[in-house]
Image (cartoon, rainbow over all chains, first blue to last red; front, top):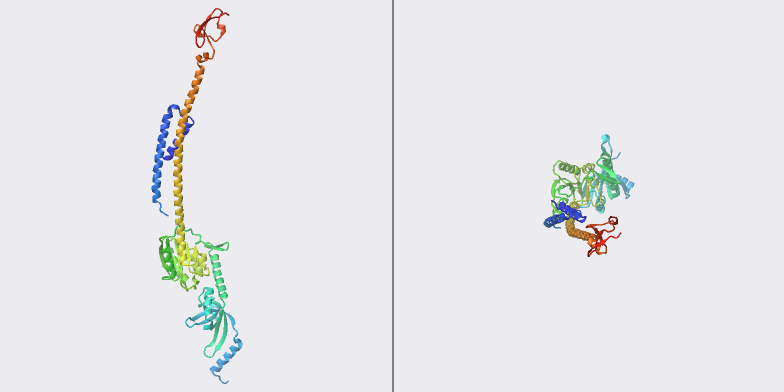
Length: 62
Length: 402
């Protein structure tokens, strides 16, 4: 899964909870799924930030 | 008839010439020929000729006289060369102020006292214009005019991002060659250039043929050059004739690679300068033109590099902010969702409580029961029936009177 796919899915879940389209019984599972998506996005973002810093080091100096 | 001595004849001629001209100088239009210049001794002998149209298109000599420029006027040669940019040599059309003298030993001789620069310049300009007109007329696909400027196919060739492989046409061991090489190889940015030299005669009679031959050699070399550079410099400011020729002008205008000229003109713009891709004054400036172009490319790369850093950072920051916002929103909506359910339940409980009959009885109402069943209509009751009335606190038996 890409960062964007995870992020879009997360946004959809939060929208669903916000508009109360999630049945109460399914709320814990939905929250768990959203939390997993946030964890995934966080780690992907950190990895990209690391790669970005490493790429910056490779750029020719002025 | 009594013969006279040669000297008598000579003196007679001298008297006739002197009588006709005296010290009066005359302006003469002529063409130079056979110049014997002695700069060390500050005098110059030259032959002046006039040519007319002969049979078969030949030019026949119609007049020919010897002339001299003596020490007291010798400076006019330098003045002429400085003003016209042309070496005082044979085959130049000149307008001269001369005195006419006859010497018993040296014969008839003209003494040149002034040279009219503007006449020669005007002639050169006319010749030059005639060549340009001829090129425009004969090769409209390669050379044309737009808003008073000459446009050529060579000028419209696209420039590469950077100049790297250079075919250099120059004279071996010339100052121009050294200046160009030095400037290019010692550039401040340490850019690397591949310079292939195509040495040739670069000035003087017939130089245009030699230069065109080197252009043809470059064309057939199969080397993917980025540009051809023609440089000339260091020496005399004169002798640019080959750069004002139809042959070289045409070769440059139609050449398939951009031609850069740095041929050391301080005053004039030659036909080659007009028709080539880019013209600069000196070989050093030609090298700088290439270096500056490459520097511009590097500057644009560095600018892109800076934009890349900023854009990437902003992108990551935005992603971070979006994710933080969604995380916070998830917490909030989960909380709100549960709170709403609690509220719903609480409202429901209130409603249910209100509907409980016990609570109704407490507010002062009572239930009428007959045989344990709630009676909602009075017509079901008859006089003498015993019914039960249920209050909130107790149940009593009641006899129906009517």
